[in-house]
Amino acid sequence: MRAREACSTALMTAACLATNYALVGVPNVKLMDLLVFASGFLFGTKVGVSVAVLTWLIYGTLNPYGFCLPILVATAASETIYGLAGGLLGSSRGPGWLEEDGLAWSSYKLAVLGFSLTAAYDLLTNLAFSLTFGIPFLLALACGAWFAIVHEVSNAALFAACTPALLRVSRLLGQSPGEREVSRSGGQ
Image 1: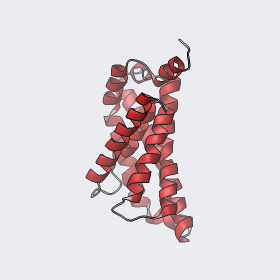
Image 2 (image 1 turned 90 degrees about the vertical axis):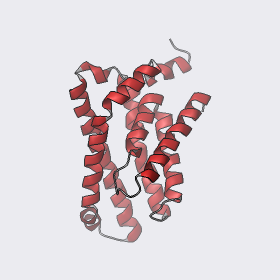
Image 3 (image 1 turned 90 degrees about the horizontal axis):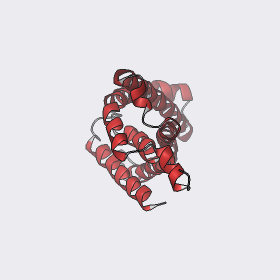
């Protein structure tokens, strides 16, 4: 990993951890998912996935709610969907697509994306919970429904609200992650 990627990974992981611990009293409302997505979008897939895994390795081990290895593995693996989605979106379309249809429409698209990614994350982690503790999957979904709804709706709102900031940071960086990956490999 190059120095820029290592620094980006460390800073974004620290931001994820700081916000997780700051919001520990608010169940399932976290900035981490958005920050992992932004890591992938701004710095590439490798950084996004690394931030996801490192954040969960630390937060899942030093979790105020307790430690459970199968759940830690499931949450760390599931969190990578945010980094993957951010990295793929950033490298394939570049940050300019946020301006194509106007900010309101872009915010809506990111809200839908945030909701969808979170729904997938919640399904995967509820499946892991079901398998780990021997609870029927539908019962696990039913018991976790309230937490899932809070998680999905709050992420949709956060993704939408932070669209302008994501756009501004991508402009400050000066080029899309895809362009950075091409220039690193020797292309123009």
